[in-house]
Image (cartoon, rainbow, N blue to C red; front, side, top):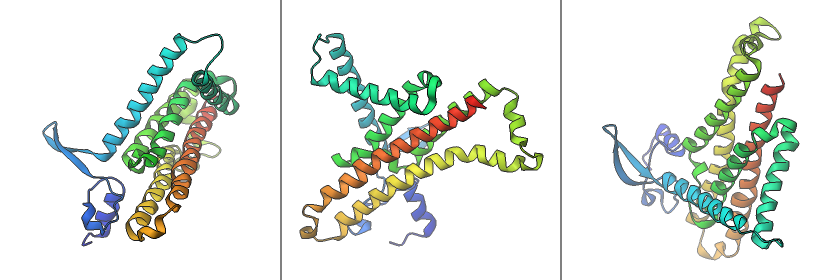
Length: 251
């Protein structure tokens, strides 16, 4: 492909763009759709931006429809209302079973986080490139969670935030400090790596194998990589966020 290792890794992380025809029919990269200018610099509207916007619009439309339906709810709930109640109760139980009595404060954030990641992960079922296959997306989500985690840490422990870094022994301060800042990296890389792996494997499958081999099998692959693995990764990201918050609150 004539691309060095640094350029290849840059494309995997979402930093560069390669044309599909340069990949011999295998296309799992982010593509530039429209050049833009921001603060005097050239930037691009990419497939990640479009897919993220579609996921957000889907959530917004669903929320508006749900609001309208619930305002007109009947004494005997219909199927859609039952589905809404099931989703809300499942997310509520999920948060409270992990965070206990403090879960009520964070159920909205964790619920929104889980739904966004889950829909992003399964967007491949609809022919989109999952936004979570772009490290820029997963890092942004991890940084948001990291800020919330540290906010809970400062709010509940105050000066103990600093003293805890020197425990149980003072010379462990560098390790404890690295451990704190490793949180967003571990959260973002875990999600990105798993979703990107599925995206690459599916692209290789579609791009390299003959059409006869593809009959029937793509449904199984999409079911595993997009649906099953996507749900697991959304669960893991949300669960780890709750665990980190609970640890800071209970310290």
